[in-house]
Structure formats: structure tokens, C-alpha cells
Image 1: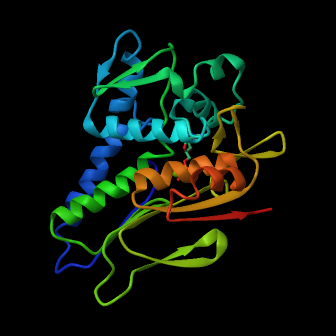
Image 2: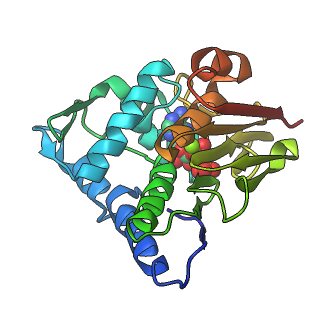
Length: 263
Ligand code: ADP
Ligand code: MG
């Protein structure tokens, strides 16, 4: 997933760490679009003529992604892969590339995936880290460790509060604030860390699917929800939608929503 994973646990020993890291490695092998042999990339190569059966993890993540795509009117869209792959080379998409995108061209049914157009590429970079944090936390919990924090880059999943405390203290960089949380997920999205300069303009690695261009609004969005599988894509969606539309569409659905504007 191209990022740093950090686990903090309250436990008698560290033996549950290895299985939690192994779970994240397993998910990386299934969901990465950087690894040519990942399950995701195999599906992108084969799911054109007929539906392809996929793992429970991949199906769960794609289902969650399609739900947020619908709710955000396509601002969150995992079919944006052809555009993000060009972005990584510092290139703008041409109309032909944009034609190969669109969340309605991804069809999910009975644990199968069908891609309606040739040359489609799925990119789970806006949702997989949140899910990986959830799953590592669940792996720890299954081994009896209830008070834990898992950070997969900017996507954090949190279990019970540390012994004798009200919650885990999470600093929110962009707004300089602090949250005290337990049994929650926190995701931050925005253009502060990853961007490309093209023609003197600073474009985020978050793409507005309507234009195929990286957003330029310099927004930073932090979402607190029950699970990373929601917090991560909703934070990305609101980065595209902007604060006003983001609050209107998701404000009631998430536990809290912090937006800051960097200029
Ligand atoms: P980060 O990767 O910094 O945690 P995000 O969770 O916002 O940030 O995810 C950004 C990544 O999601 C991009 O690098 C790209 O892989 C993918 N992506 C970009 N734009 C979109 C979009 N509109 N919808 C879904 N995924 C996107
Ligand atoms: Mg995200």
C-alpha cells in the first residue's frame, strides 16, 4: 500500500503483532494496484467478457466503494485507475482515457465482478488502507487484545480506550486539534502530502472524476466514523465535493467531520 503501518497495543506481550501485520500483507496482495500479480490486477485483466469470482475481501471493499460512489454522485470512484496511472507519470488524461472510467461500468453480483468496458483499471488507493486498518484491529481483537490502535498511513482504526483512560488521543494536523476516541476510525485526506506540479499548477493525487484532473482546492478533510471502510472513502469523496456539499451529503452519517483549507 506504499505507506507506513503502525500498531500500538496494550497487552502482556507483543505476540499478536505478527498476525496483524500478516493480515495487512495479505490485503496488500489482494487489493494493491501497484503489484502486477495482485488479485485486483488479475481481475482487471480478466473480468471483461464474463463475471469473475473474487475473494471476500475484494468483494467487500468494492461493495463499500460502490455505495460511497452512489452517495457521492460519483465523486468517489474506484474506476478512476486509468487516470491515476497517468497522474503517477505527471500526465493529464485524454478523452479516450476518461471514457474507460465510470463507476456504473463496474458491476458486482454474487461475489463476482464484471467490467463493462475494455481497458478499465480499478484503483483502491482511496479505500483499501481504511479497510486494512479495520482488519488488523479485528485480528488483534480475535487474539484478545481489545485496546489497540492501527494506523495505515493516514487511516487509523481504534479499539477500546487504553486502561484507565477515556480514549486514544489523536492529533489532527491540518486543524491543530485533538480528538479523544475509542472504537472508531479516523481518516484524513487532502493534497498536503501528495501532489504533482504540472504547468505551474499544483494538482492533488485525488482526482475529480468529472474532469479527470487532480483537485486544486488545497482542502484537508478528517472523517471519524465507525469503520475505516467508511471513513477512508468518505474523506476522499469530501475532498472532491468540497466542504459544503460534503457536509450536506455525509454530515449526518459520520461521527465528526473536520475540514480545513490550506492556502
Ligand atoms: P491517501 O492515499 O493520501 O490516504 P486518499 O484516501 O484520499 O489519500 O486516497 C487517494 C488515492 O485514492 C489516490 O492516490 C488514488 O489512488 C485514489 N483516488 C484518487 N481520486 C479518487 C477518487 N475520486 N475516487 C476514488 N479514489 C480516488
Ligand atoms: Mg481515502
